[in-house]
Structure formats: C-alpha cells, structure tokens
Image (tube, rainbow, N blue to C red; front, side, top):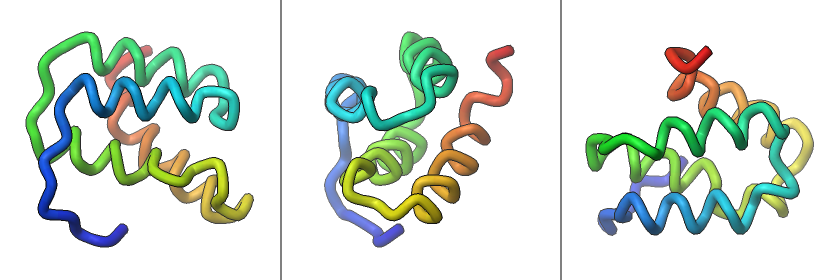
Length: 78
C-alpha cells in the first residue's frame, strides 16, 4: 500500500468499510465493525482505510492479499 499523509478518523474508516461491505467476505465485515467499535491507534486506522480503499476494483488476487492483511487486525476478535 502506498503511504498517505492523511490521517483518517475512525468514522472515515467505518464509512469506507460500509461502502465496501458488499465486496468483502461477510465474516470479515462483522469482525471489522467489531474492531472499529473500540478506539484504535491512528496508524492502524490509516492502514485499514487504505486496505479498504478501491477494494471493489481490486483483482481477486489483490483482494485475497488485502483480506489476509485485514484479518491480521481482527484476529483477536473470535
């Protein structure tokens, strides 16, 4: 992912998640919403935002890579 100098708020990340929900695996959507219900460090918010950004236009291979990275954030939520 390219680095971005913009800090994305927790609400920005939640909104991006909502906009991409139909393209993401359902279990991942649920866990990401749970993850975002708690205050998270800015760095993690930015990373998640950029993994979700343009998810819908990513290739299947790219989506799998992003899913793997997103699952790392939510692995504590089981």
